[in-house]
Length: 223
Image (cartoon, rainbow, N blue to C red; front, side, top):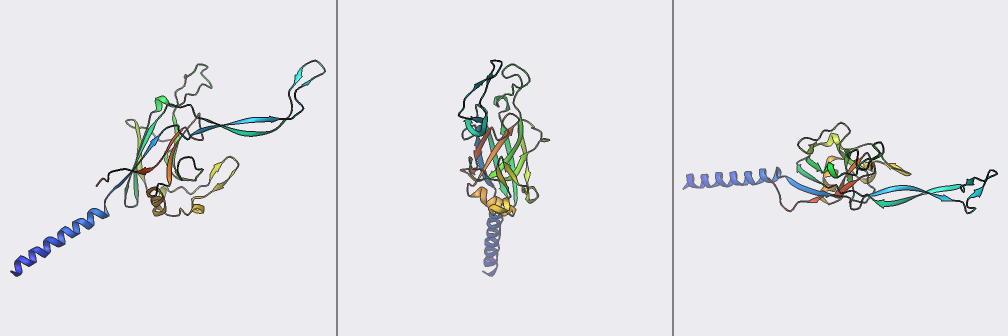
């Protein structure tokens, strides 16, 4: 009887330990679908003086003085899409970013013909806040030296990758992550868990971001 109870207790202990272990190492998966929705180009348009154009002494037309410039935002005309998958394991974030580079907005500045120079991913960041918010960078997942392998960028983010530099947004003052309460890796992971993060792919043509998406929890949990 005692032997049977001992085996029963050992079996229960083993099952309990396995449950605790599987919970501790369970991987949480998050996804973001990237497109041009919510992205915009910024054009500096001039505000002229009310005097209007003038005629010079030689009969030439002199344009009015420019008083200032204002920002005019228009949607990014991109057909590109992408997908970001994040898998959180403890204090590590494993990521896979796939971007349809063939459909990125094409740079025509030097070729002269529309679409002469294919678009390329410049850098990609995970920002604090939902897509559309001007939030600081939490992680850089693609840098100038990153290479696409088999159509994807991939890697692992740790506390050492937490972005500590200020983020500049034109005339907006630089902000550090710490000013938003993101100090540790745990803080960044919690922001992702709460749906308070987004990914933005910046290109040479659209340095402010060409495609992006809000990061949300996937429907299923992987182990």
